[in-house]
Image (tube, rainbow, N blue to C red; front, side, top):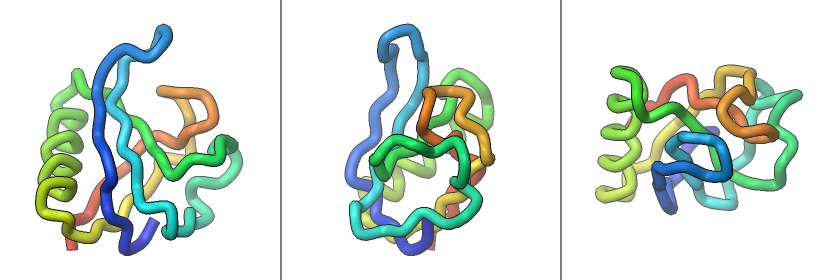
Length: 94
């Protein structure tokens, strides 16, 4: 996603999935890297919060949410954390 604004961030246990989830503005367009596994009609991506990189992604997501700065977000081309929603690869604050 390019030039997205983060609308919400949550971390927790959803069903049997432990994850952090980021919801982006609905007017963003998913680019090709989100591709085949992103099947749910949601502008949301997931990441694990219990790893060093997950903690870094959470810090970036919370900073972007608080300041309402635009971000570019790229997916890993995998939906390993929650079925139908892409895993976050990286977040760039703009």
